[in-house]
Structures are given as structure tokens and as C-alpha cells.
Image (cartoon, rainbow, N blue to C red; front, side, top):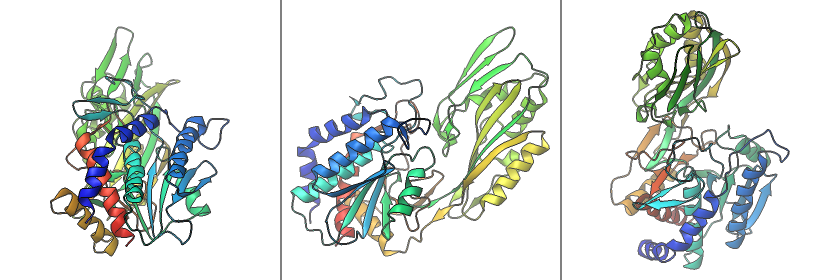
Length: 427
């Protein structure tokens, strides 16, 4: 009923929408706890301040939850039945960008900038979805809430705090995953390890910026030469979309370090499922697991590494962490840290998910379906929460990598999906 009106509204206001996106992209909101401005630093706070200002401008009833998160309710009375949750913090920019990562760059009908897909672009789409509903006078019968958080990329401490202080409605969706509906999220293991740099005391290795990102660069220095091995960055949950510079280095290594040779065997270049580490599991719902060596550095005479694993929903954290720990310890490595999350799954037969699928089908014009991914979305630890967008499964938007982007076509779908979903879920 409102599909065409919403489409026309967004097209008429696109310059203003993109101006808002440029504003939030310009805030380099990498969260940090090593700061005088608690809890996550001045840039995270600046992004949340921007977010609550936009919610105030919409006439929503707003609240700042101690700079962990901010939210706005559409009505001032009545508990919300729905929350739309997204984050305004981002990962570090890294290297290799064709343009300033903190300046919105529009070229070839595509929006470039850190956060354009994760989650600043979708957050702007949510803001304008609410604005469209309000300005078009579309009836909303039940209260709903928009929540912006400030620390998703560093462990979701913001939402742990938010849940304790405020809590969530029964229906929560986040634009922090994929369309049509992401109802199954694999479990996570993040592990760091170390070993002596035996046999290669003069060797220097530097690779990897974060455990959840495939390294696109590996710097290797020896007594006789300095070499940079280049790869392609990708999100840690999708190692097949990148080219791992660390495993590429190991594939060509023929030196005398028993630990580097062991890593070469455990992490063959081009293998993504951890089979050589005695893993390689899969199931019918969540598919095949992933396992990636994402960090490798030499520090104070030691070889230090990090691993990102995403495992199927029929396995547990204890099972997977036990296997990878044993594989490394049997090769002589010391485990320095190991943490993670259990898988997350919501039954696709629920009225909530079925409504989102109908919205997808109406807006996109094709059959909706539920999907499983390895990425940890913002609702991973929220009972009943699912991801609805912001990208399509066939896209590679360089999330967490250089030249992160969202096409204008997908951005338009974001706007229309979220507006229609809010309307249908609050009837």
C-alpha cells in the first residue's frame, strides 16, 4: 500500500540522505577502552551524539545509556514491540584505500567509506525509514525503538551493558548481516598462540591487524632481504573472499624454524575449513565451517599468531576450541588466549521471520529465504534476534577491508526494506 510512496519519498530526499551519511562517515569512530573518555573513547561518543541528535530531530523519545548506546522510541508511551539495532563504531581504516576512508566518496554509482556497509550506511537508512513513516503519515499502531551502539567491533560490551540496564523487546532485527533473513550464525573461536623463534633468530614477521580480518600484507625481514607478500583483505568469517598473505608466505617458506613449518602444514594456503587442524566440520543448516590464520608477528624472540574460526550450530565452543588447542599444542605451541561464542539460531517458522521474508519478497520481487553465515552479527547474543540486511549474499562489499562500499542500488533497498519492515511489524 505504501511501497510506491516510500520509493518516491526516498528518491526525492536522496541528497539529504547522502549528506547524513557523509556526516557520520566523517567521524572516525573506532572504539577504544584506553581512553579518558569512557567507556569507548571520544570518537565512539561523537558518533553516538550524532545518532541521538538525529533521533531527537525525528521527535523520538530518546535516552543515552551512559555512552554505551543511545535509543529513541517512536511513541512516548507503551513498551516497544520491536527494536531495530545497529552500531556506529567501525574497525580501523587500514591501508590500501583509493580515497579517504573517512570521507564519503561516490563513484560509479557506489558509496565508498569506512562504515558504508557496516553499519553506518544501514543506520542512516533506518533513520530515514523512520522519517519517511512519520512525514508520510503512515499509521503505526505499536511502539518501536531504534538503538545505536558504540562498541560492536570490539566485543559488543555496549549491548551487554544495554541488556542489563534496559533490555530488548521480543522482536529485534539488525542491519548487520545479509538479506533475505539471517537466522543462523555460526559459533566463534578467537585464539592466540606463541612459540620460540627457534632456528630463525634474525627473522622478523609482521602481518595482521585484527583477529577477524584476513591479512592483505605480510612483511618479512631477514639478514639478507626485506620482502612484502601481498594478498587481499576480507572479513574473517569469509576467508574465501580474500587472499591470505600469511598463508601465502608460509606456502613458500623453506627455512629452519620448526614452528613455521608446523604452521605451514596446519594452515595450507587456500584451505578455508581447518581440515588440516583436524576440523573441517559442516552441517545441513549452517554449512561448512571456516578457519583462518589471521595474525603472525615476531615479538621479543617469539612467534605470535592468531586464529579466527566460525563453526556450525551442531558443534559447541568447547568441542571446537578443544580440537584447535590440541592441534597447536601437539605442534609445540603455547595457547595464550582462547575465547568465543556459541552459535545462534532462530526458528524460521516464527511469525517474526515470516513477516520479514514477506517484506523482502514484496520489496525485492523475488522469493525470500533464510540463510546461515559465519559472521557474528549484532544480535548474536540476543534471544530471538535476527539480521535483516544490509547486504546481499552475492555481494562482496569489502567489509573490514580497504574500499568498503555499498552500491546505490543496495542502499536504496536498505531504505525501502527497513521502512516496510517497521510498518508491517508494528501493525
